[in-house]
Length: 404
Ligand code: CA
Image 1 (tube, helix red, strand yellow):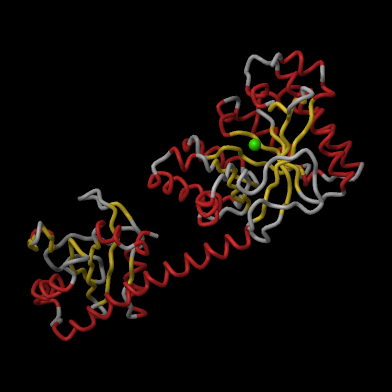
Image 2 (image 1 turned 60 degrees about the horizontal axis):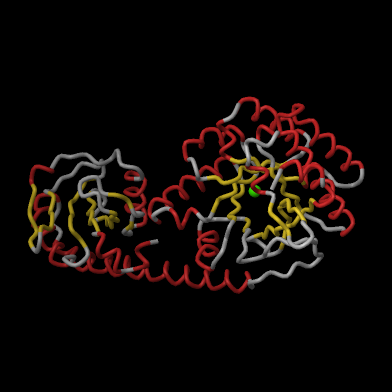
């Protein structure tokens, strides 16, 4: 569409509202406002108009201001509570130092629409512009109570430092990237993002949820808010009681059952491994005969493990490495004397094992030697000596509960 047609026919520009749903109460807690052009027959998305870099920013400001005005009036008339999510790009915000938006919001605050109900979405992509100026402006907006969301997080992981600096209230995660990334890689990105969100106190909102799997993913990775066609499509009116397409309460209780059952199955593995080692403990005769003790263990963990060794309470390896090659266990005496205490959680886990006299299973990590995803099961043989059994990937892969 010709941008001039849009600007000179503002009366044909309308907002549509896409519900944002809370993971806590499964209700609609607000709406994202999107622009549409009504050509008399159908509603045309204004996405292209807003994304087109050739369209003057002043045009975009004008159209956005018009949409916002209708939206706030709709909220006030329908007496709808909750948040109003709006989208602005960095360049557009810089027009008149962002005063157009602020002045309108101040006006509406006087009419009873407080500014802390506004969530301003800026895209991560915008950080490539003048970040300092943008950061400065957003800080200024925040002093008025306006909430900040970073849109389409995850597209560029290099922006983590800037997101941290911005301290947004909400991180919007584009769930479509689950389909584009290999799932292992995306899980790592999600892990870093959820740590970041925790650190800076931001809530995660998963958007573009289009099927059950993506909703499950959003739930599992700690999404506080959900948005997407699977739950609710954008609509022209704001409803007091919004009907969602799926029953989220039912879905979430399915996820909870599934997750609980997987955790229980995993613990069955751990308990079983513990029992097997305890049964061998009478054969443990201290640090003099470590290698012959491990020989016993290899026979018992032939299916699960590909490598094992024993360390003392300072992380010093006191046994050879036992490594499975094809069907045989090969002894590598030169590994004796290695120190593993530098590894993340090593000392913490060791002291826990000693204190509670229980085995422990690590999370999934990539083994530096084999590059395979593995887990380590460890067990306290005594106060001073600890057995480490590396579980091989093929075994983990065959047992879904070990994959989570
Ligand atoms: Ca958005």
